[in-house]
Structures are given as C-alpha cells and as structure tokens.
Amino acid sequence: MSGPATSGIEITAKKMTVGAGAKLSHAVIKAVGAGLGGVEHLVGIPGTVGGAVVGNASSDGRDIGSVVESVTVLERSGELRTLNQEQAGFSHRKSSLVGLAILSVTFDLESADVTALTKRMQKLWIGRNASRPSEEPRIAMPFVEPDEMSVSDLLHQVGLAGVREGEVSIDTQHPQFLIARSGATSEQCMKLIERVREQVLLQTGIDLQLDLQIW
Ligand SMILES: Cc1cc2nc3c(=O)[nH]c(=O)nc-3n(C[C@H](O)[C@H](O)[C@H](O)COP(=O)(O)OP(=O)(O)OC[C@H]3O[C@@H](n4cnc5c(N)ncnc54)[C@H](O)[C@@H]3O)c2cc1C
Image 1 (cartoon, helix red, strand yellow):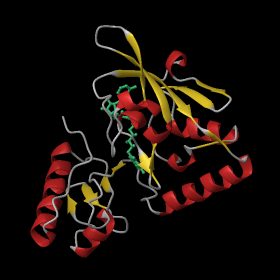
Image 2 (image 1 turned 90 degrees about the horizontal axis):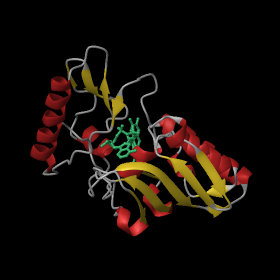
Image 3 (image 1 turned 180 degrees about the horizontal axis):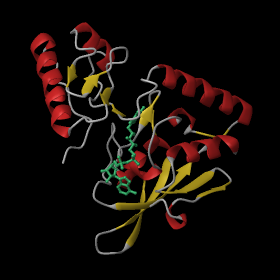
Image 4 (image 1 turned 90 degrees about the vertical axis):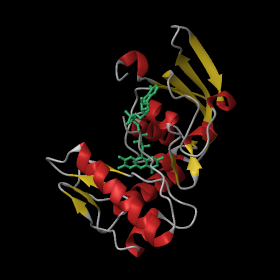
C-alpha cells in the first residue's frame, strides 16, 4: 500500500484525497500546509491513513471519520466501491470497513489560516510527545479509555504504573502505554494485559476493554 498508486496525496479546493498507504503524518502536514483544517489534531499518531480510517483514530476529542467524505474500497469480489461517510459506519475507534481493502480516502476539510493551523499542530505535537514515553520504539495503548476516568489515572490509582512481565512493562510515568523491549514475547504482553485487567476489575470494578486486535 505504500507504493505510488496507493499513497499519493492530492488537494483540490477543500478536498484532500489520500492513498490509504500514505503516512497519516504526511497527510496532516500537507493539509495544514495548504491551509486546510480538520485533521491537524491527529498529528503524531503513527501509521497510515488506511489504518487510521479503519480504526477511526481520534485525538483531542475529534475523530478522523468526522472529516471523511468518502472511502474507496476494493471488495472481496475485486470490485471497486466508493462508500460515503455514513456507509463507512464510524463510531468510537471503530468503522464498518474492517475486512475491506481501503484504497483511498477523500476528506472534506475547512479553509483556515496556515499560520494559526501550524501553531495549533505544533502545540498538539509538543503536548503529545510530552505525554508519551520518548525513547521507546515499541509502544502501544492497549486499553480503551473507560467512561469513569482516564486509563492513566486509573492505573496510577491502583498502583499498576511500572508493573512488568519479562521484557514488557506498563510505563511508570504514562501508564496508558505498554512498552515492549528487545526480547519481549507476545505471551508476556498477554500476561501483563490480563494481570492489569484483573487487578483493575478487582480493585475498582472497572472492566477495561482492549483496544488491540489480537490474532
Ligand atoms: C504510540 C502510539 C500512539 C497512538 N495514539 C493514538 C491516538 O492518539 N489516537 C488514536 O485513535 N489512535 C492512536 N494510536 C493507534 C493508531 O491509531 C493506530 O495504531 C494506527 O492508526 C494504525 O495504523 P497502521 O497503518 O499502523 O495500521 P495497522 O496497525 O497496520 O493496521 C490496523 C488495522 O487496520 C487495517 N488496515 C490498515 N490499512 C488498511 C487498508 N488500507 N485497508 C483495510 N484495512 C487496513 C489492518 O488490517 C488492521 O486490522 C496510537 C498508536 C501508537 C503506537
């Protein structure tokens, strides 16, 4: 998907069409540079536009689906189909696009002042980096934010910040992140996640939901 046919970024007036294999960060920077607002809050979320749209990535209280106009997908039959926002079925960190191959996405953005947008993007980028373990290359946010309180506050409160299973740990400062160091195994990840879920349930009654796909 990172090949030229499925990773280009084109902007016409307020519409931005992006190949699903393009990096989300590239699309965000391109939109901001063109004076188009609506995706700048997604700055710093790793991955591709396809991945972000399937999982309806969100940040700062706004999800990517809210600015999607249409999604072109390749169906299992080999046919191309263009789905509108409603058909894409966006809900919290979800879409109905699972199982389809997304080829491109068209966003309907808002005209905005480039300098103001750039400032906003930089501010969000700095804030995001400050709230994320910096030196770690393999990190994930395994849990859905519960309604009651943030995962970070919850894990601090129940004393699970910093817990470790082999080479996998919950970050001490920002416990919403799971860190896998060199030599970590999937078994260690699963064990630690289960341990955290169990402890949280026992101590608070909150049933943490997974925000990971495990196969
Ligand atoms: C450090 C860190 C911070 C993060 N912060 C946030 C955040 O603030 N907000 C947030 O919402 N998310 C956040 N995430 C999660 C992030 O949204 C996803 O990891 C990312 O969007 C996945 O994109 P990807 O290209 O890596 O997809 P992958 O991980 O490769 O795939 C994810 C899923 O999408 C499917 N998929 C990918 N591309 C396509 C395609 N073209 N067509 C069909 N299916 C496809 C895959 O099959 C898979 O099921 C964070 C993740 C990390 C690691």
